[in-house]
Image (cartoon, rainbow, N blue to C red; front, side):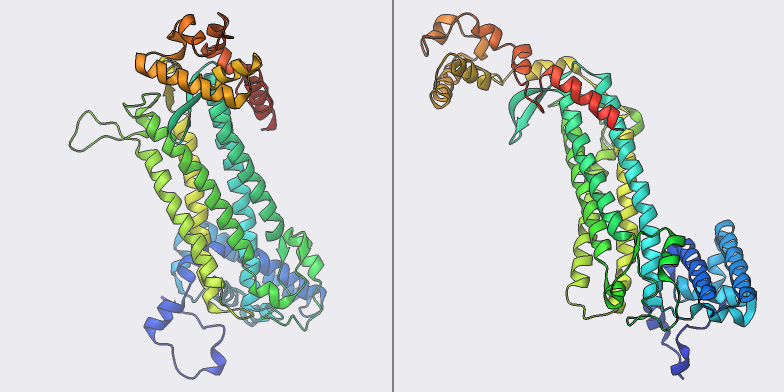
Length: 460
């Protein structure tokens, strides 16, 4: 390996201890910013040309050199290992000087690694958010497709993991659709705050050279420029926001994973995963394990940890840049990788799940899940809800003693608790009626759910 010069060596006469140099260097992970660094460097160079700091000829040399570096980096995976570098910025500058000579040293005029890395990270993160938003949409589409495949399936709804009220499977699917819709909105909101150009802030006080920051921002696709140079190089709020947004994505995927895991158990028996997304046991031949979703559930903790790591890293930092902030990149990169992979796998699992519709319907018809419907029936007969609730509670106790469902009690038995009960009560207690009455917007009535499913499809 050839040794490159550090960007800061003039003030030093001795060499860094190898152990410290290894500890200090970030090139092993910040090389992911390579394309962003080259792109930002081109724009910075154009700004220096417009400011008269670089001549047209020098600018053209630098642009050509940077383009060649980008092409080498994209086509040759060993390109990065041929030069030992402290970070991606020193790597690009050293390669540029190799190609174009001393004119390459002029590119860093009016720029610090502080505003350079902030710019690179924002450029990279902007694209990462776009990729996550697209994958969120793809996972939402999978939920909609799954719901469309099983339009009449009924699922027992739970609160406290106890059977509560029946709902349509489509309604369950769209609950997760809504969660992911909020995740998309959050990421797009965060993107607006990511899309601010810090370049031109230099180390912390701003640049002495009259580069047109607005023109550089336009070239790089930023919506605006930062308003305070000290804040611009100190700010990692956008990293925290991004990781926090992803943490919520993983909360939602983990909840989905938990339910899929539960519903594929023999005890529930609602879902069956295909062999494509399940594994077996090394000891027990009969096992089919939902490892795909268990890993999604488990990986959520990685992103939660990154969120706390960033907050802790930032909480006591004085202005402006501090080397602690180098810790932002691994957290952000791994958060993106983990979140994207979990979204992909969740969508894959949803494409490989089969429903046991008969088992789901039978379970949704048991456990007196129509008790609230009986209370509502009494209310419609003129009984105050609190009194109706108490009356139905006593009827439930009677059914438990008899070992039957509410609809299996005789009319006389029901009337012994409330004389206003008539034979139409059995229609009211049917599964179809229990679903159909939940007809307010957002409810699980078939008509409402059909509208919601159509709206979800159209929103995509």
